[in-house]
Length: 339
Image (cartoon, rainbow, N blue to C red; front, side, top):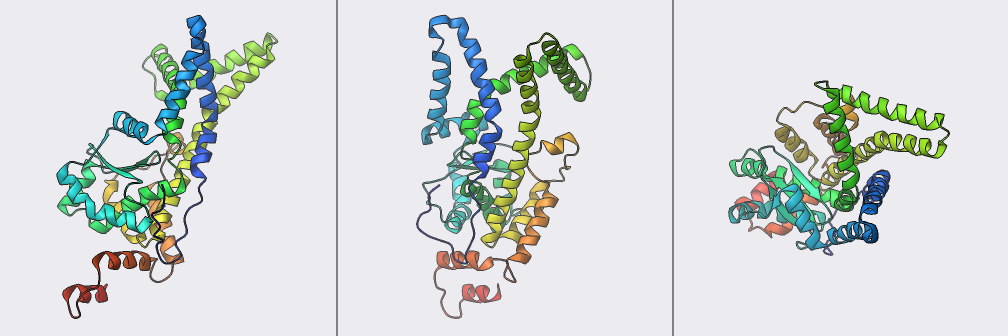
């Protein structure tokens, strides 16, 4: 995402660009596992053995382009261009969010995902989407324009922090590993019968433990060490990725707060939460998002840190620039003085 040359006033600080790199590092064992699986599978095709890994790598290179990202967000995420009515409705809020973040209109593309849940997304390095439910809430007045701007600015904050930039590529490069893992856990669940999910997980861990013990007992230390590393990576890497993702959510929230929309984003989180229960236990460790309560508390803290105006001078400056000078004594000028 390239700035358009406009810098928002007020000394807005931008999050450090490290989230995407850290998530890619956390996914490195899965990418290596995918490569090993592809190399193992390519042995069956003999002289074409190098073609499968080469096609896998070439596919990743294509996905890093604008056209490749458009294809994957539409096919994998269900994103689509807003229809004419939706485009007209979203244009004012989207334009304001772009100006606040200093982003050129052509650098990021806005999509709509057909879904009954209220949500918004940032994907790759050029894509932002809102669910059709968010568009409906905005059209009916349940979600005011400032709150929608805050939500969109939060998603642009993900691009500013680099959190989502490598994730389309990472998802592609880890796909063989994730597919193999899903097949294995599905097979274990079938063999375990109608047991709880936790029972299937215990069975997988127990099976891996037995395999490690047998290989070590037979003196195959290298194989045993590889199995131990695979087991640890399968557990620790998703936990690390989820923790980094949660930190990136706080950073994107702070991005919106620095641009004067902390209160509006907190209100939007309350409106869009729809009474969802917070995850607990193992699910909480693997959750990619903090709870709404945690995010709202962080936004309240940011408001205090930003001072009496809560950073609103940034939003007000852009809003005034968009509206232009008001006529003396006009209703618009009166409303600005009151705000």
